Image (cartoon, rainbow, N blue to C red; front, top):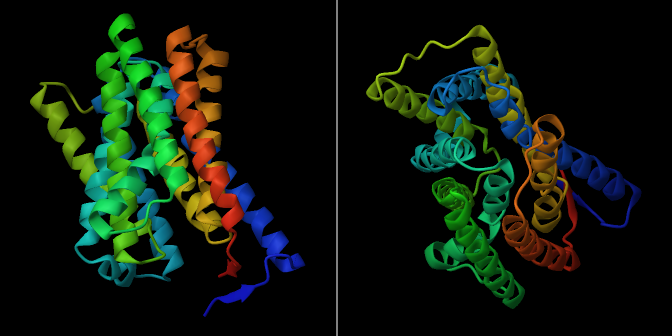
Length: 306
């Protein structure tokens, strides 16, 4: 059984620091998606997703086998029917996110994605009856303005479909979050494994339906495999381990490292940068998230050590 320790003790401070480092590392892993996607030689987004999803499933399954010393089935059963539901939502989010980055800039995609926690708060209110703090409602209003600016920018610069797909991805992540919250389990890896498996099946079906070949160059397949294992699998492991040592607000704030780093990588490597209007809209969205998460830092709960 976990032991609660006072928030000001040395053990708590050390645990919080470890948690912070792990969550920042998770955001750094997640931020590499656009960089890897832009580095592909000739594979399309759906072809990449076939290998990325398969690698996610295999990597997370391996983590589960190690964690549970041979059999991950008890963890899978603990989630019950909510496992496939959460996995389907996460799979949809990951698929839409990658496809959106093939149609718009990485900045557009990740900035739209960062409102997922706000969407989750609203969805939790509707589905679970969870309370929504006034500051969260205020942050939601700010976010609506930012989304409006970015959608308008998409109309002007031809990235509307990609922007809307990334918004759909944010909804997928929100559904994933609320489903796991309803399940009341600490081990989220089974849901990620479901997402990898479902994502593989869906992306392979799309590739075949489009008359494309699932076989791509070794270079592209290798990058896609790294995306699935390191960028998604390892990132989720870091995040799961880190959030055990932090409050939800702290974890949300630190995971914004993904939003900050993702556009920087593609700007440094490929010179890809947002136009002025999109940058304004993205800044408004990021501001909404900072307002929401920073307000939660005052509601510090005791640190719980695993």
